[in-house]
Amino acid sequence: MIELSIFNDIFATTFHVLYFVMIIGTIAIVVLDNRQPVKTMAWILVLAFLPVIGLVFYFFFGRSTRKEKLISRKGVTRLTKHPMAEYQAQAAFSCPEEQYQLMHFFRQVSHALPFDGNAIETYSDGLSMLQALIKEIGKAKHHIHLQFYIFEDDSAGRLLRDLLIDKARQGVEVRLLYDDVGCWHVPHTFYDEMRGAGIEVRSFLKVFFPLFTSKVNYRNHRKIAVIDGRVAFTGGMNIARRYIKGVPWGIWRDAHIRIEGKAVYGLQTAFLTDWYVVDRTLITSARYYPEIETCGNALIQIVTSNPVGEWHDIMQGLLIAISSSRKYFYIQTPYLLPTDPILLSLKTAALAGVDVRIMIPMRADARITHLGSMSYLDDMMRAGVKIYLYNKGFLHSKLMVSDDTLSTIGSTNMDFRSFEHNFEINAFMYDSASAQKIKEIFLQDQKDSILLQRKEWTKRPWYQKVEESIVRLLAPLL
Image (tube, rainbow, N blue to C red; front, side, top):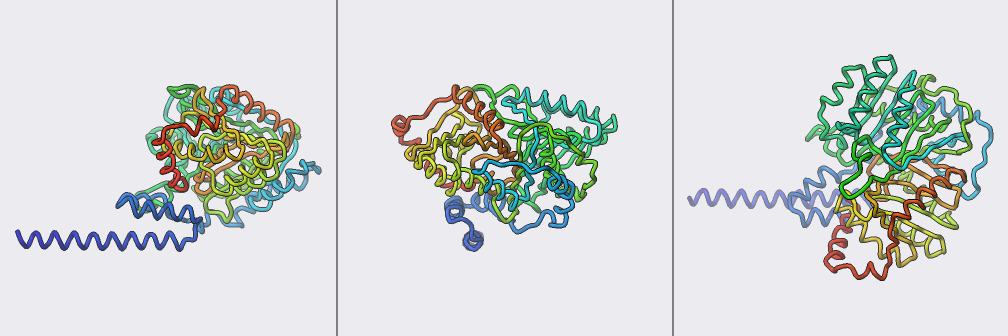
């Protein structure tokens, strides 16, 4: 018994020493990675006060791979060859003077080509978007490219799956890209049935435990549909029944856009770039970039961002957009966990007299992130930002509009994860007609929202304030 006790003591001491060394070593790695100080401190708190769990959490979600290259510069050049030729050949177009700097930034940093002469159609509910998508897929003659963060095995997903199978059997090329983590719980048989029909199906950054766990943190949140290279869809909607039927407490409000025109080239390039990442096949044929005539008057730039690039493209672009606003800046987002630069720019604009309005759901699908969002409201209201709580259901819409000259719809949330960890995509529009459409969506939803009053907000229970403040410490990690 004495020998067993000594052995247990030695084992316990050894374990604690090794664990202490691992903690100190991991903290040193976090510090030497030179991240934002707030994010570094958040990880130090997690590692110091959540034994074992903190290490596991960091192993899955904390390691940085921003120096990785997913595609070479030569590959990007080949993928953008045809869009670049069309961009250079198009007639001169006019961009609102106050938005020229933003357009130039995206052109320089994200290699996003602006195209004039596009027609757009907006959707604020899943049913109308799915019906429009099915209609366009039904007309496909050459290829269908689909990319979603979530593609569920439910009534909505099976409806679209069966249509894709029919089109593949008709000889149409069909490629489907889904996020491996976003569709973790979807049975493999769901996708295998499509593969059996000749559809090329791939998962983005597939996670094999325990070899590639760092990839859990970097997810592809983009939603892209391209049909025959002429019509495309993007926005915040995935393929799942809840996007149509809603949630137990109300409807599911979202925002998506259909584009017809040369801006489709940008969505095509984004899809084919991601396809190369997972399939290592570089698809550059001119067949995927057909000649397109002028369809409308919308000037559109398709902008992507990713966690392995040199810059935070969309976040930095939003900083320019907010600081350039003169009259108003309206935002819809399901999650409001802004980085410090975004938070400061919003407050600065409001203090300078810009009508800054932010709409978030009154009730969200994730309690932790919603608590974190609530912790920012008082500070912003104090600076003059108007906060609207959408109370007709769950607001999943990700849109922004400013000064009747700039608008955007896409997959990007106003949070750390979208800005720094996810692969995202947004359509930025630089014309008055598009801005008026997006603005009308916001103002219609404003009728189903409550304008939060700071005087009443400060009276919420003390324990709620404590919960919010604690969660806010972890905001960079959520």
